Picture 1: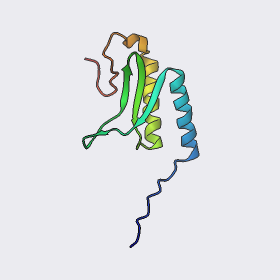
Picture 2: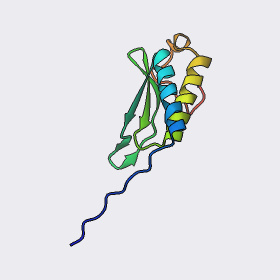
Picture 3: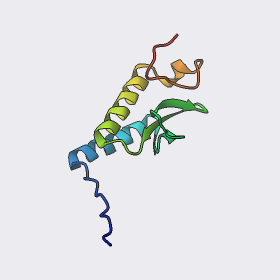
Picture 4: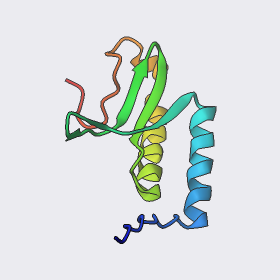
Length: 103
């Protein structure tokens, strides 16, 4: 009986990992905590996103996301925070929605 070989996931290029590490550091410097979690529940694949929990900003990214997807998510969130600092959003909902315009 042959055993199945485990798929070996290709490692991202060094320049992408360096960029990702730089962005994670920059996010931490501005008070944004980045989480890599399995974004799936009851068979549904969920989108991650930027939200505020107890006044602190958190970015949730699916841990299966590629380095390019992670970089894009962090860059987008940093840009959104820099355009509208958290203090300006303090009176709004606890969630910063990156997909829909304010109503």
